[in-house]
Length: 550
Image (cartoon, rainbow, N blue to C red; front, side, top):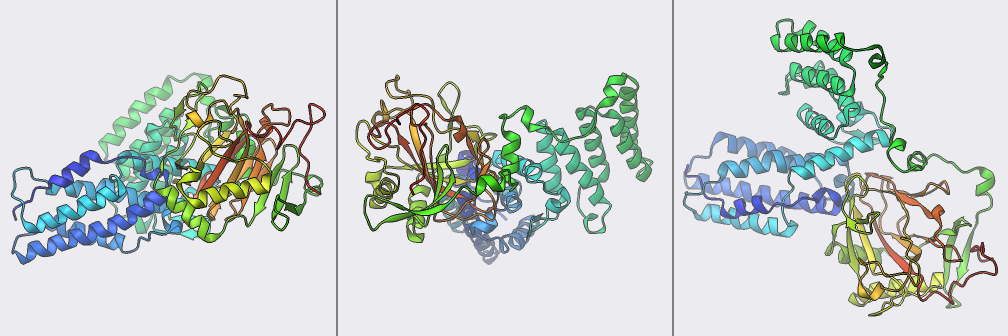
């Protein structure tokens, strides 16, 4: 067979971009693309056979192997929003499709019509999704799995078998588990690495895993190294001694055991006190991280007496016959859920408009700079101005009616920011943060603010539309208030970030819990304090609060 030049394929390999993992909708697009890619690849093989060109056995084997996997994948949010499925999809592109493209690539070979068709199809598919995933995407999905597992108190045995809560999918193969453990090591997550490698060691003794290609002694060496990195070399000895019992003639394991024995002999008494335990993230994260974790797991932290004071009612608006279904969740600061405030069709349109603009989400650093940090925030964001579509303007007017605040967008001194549309990625989250940034009216403008927002002050309030449901995770939680707001499609959360006297309210600290299963879509409006002087005036005393409408 004459190998054909993959000119466009080589370009797409060079252009491949990252960040596919940070929005589930991008993974859904990837599944559709893979099905098209497989169809084109299959047509290419068939055309080569018709020309009596020899198709190498490994190309045929690749085609059959990929087909067995692709035929079971689905492009819906439930499937692609499962982190294990996302890992499988990313892994195929990085570890199977890419090597096959590189194998077929030939700079000096002639281009025939059969290849031209494949080349053209792949180029079109690649253009639609702005580049195939690269290894960074696969590593990021691995890190997300490593975070979700302890955060949501999952069982590694279940994860290895493809089970998350009540959802079952294809299991993780030993090679995939080994890759995740390798990423854990690279991230300095030695506790996580130890747990995953221990499970692998157990599985190598299982009859249904014995045909896989990871040799047991490699896992033993890796696990011994992980224990050493954690500070427990005596456990390294235990691992190697057990493995030598199964492979007594393995000289590599024997040499490693002797090396760790020397390290153990050098330990002082204090070093023997190390015990294996999960990392306490409260020591390195926000002070409210422990409360945040409990709320995300559904722990109820408020007393029945506190909850008994809350109520639901029909809130009047500026239009007499329009009332909002308001559920008061907290009085000071005012936090409410408005139910049934956006229709199914409107939600679909907002997602469609937002998806066209999605880019990796940023957040403000302490110095006021916009940065990307996937340990803090995993999502993609699109911004839509009111004038871009009548629906977006309509939604702003709806918020005005229900809150009594001004939301006019103008060339200068706008009352609010553009509508932000977000889709969260694998394990997508936003760690505890506040929406205000401490820049009141009269203060010098923030350099990152666009011209229409300069001089408009701080974010007085937040309106958050929920555009989808998720199966598990994704709640908005308020650690200081000890409140969890579940993702409720068609509803919206509303709260004031500033007190009536204009000062920031730290109690509005909130977080987006990691999405465990599903695709979370939200859109929000940040309302600026400029223009709200008569809509939400200061009270008669400095500690005036917002009270529910009776």
